[in-house]
Image (cartoon, rainbow, N blue to C red; front, side):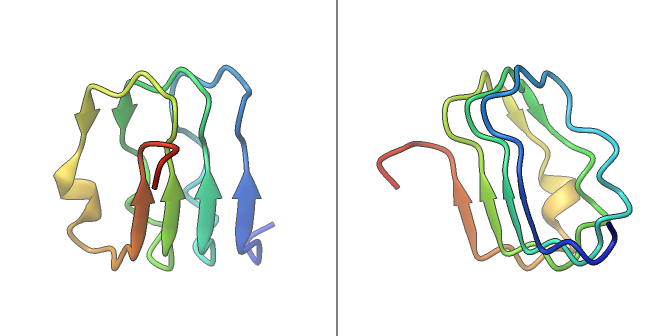
Length: 80
């Protein structure tokens, strides 16, 4: 599963982003329509280019986790 480049976890009632640390080749991650309040646990996803976070319960987007990432697109709202 470490070769996975796209992962869709939307609409699963996920509250915490976890257990993704081995997906280092991941380029697109869709965790929209969940119950996520805080973006964290993505620091090892160094190839991540698109992160979909539409319709979550976001309060905090941890900047430190994105300091090493070259994230091209972060979609927080369905109008993006």
